[in-house]
Image (cartoon, rainbow, N blue to C red):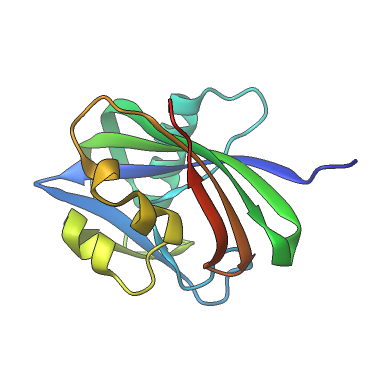
Length: 160
């Protein structure tokens, strides 16, 4: 069986109690119009934190520090026949000026409650809820299956 797998990440950058989020352009092939953290695909043999720093800098113009893994998972998108292995990485703002021309969409600073109540937030983020934004050392692992776009067919958080 051939598998169409993408290895990627999203990085939640924290500054002054808010997180930098990306409202993806409506014309995007993957998750159009969905609110998620900045991030992207890992390059060949690229470390997770190196990728997070690179993607955040490329998309936002910001530098980050104090990186930590908060969640890891697998998501399958039926409509695109594509599987994603990814990490949700959290980091603190370290410097730089936020770009006004993000190639992926519109960048916005939001509180955790604003993120979780946003009508177009990535379904995985909504279902992980406050556990995702907690300050505990808990690392979450889960699987998700999407029928199309941001519509979930199934979602399971794994027990440690």
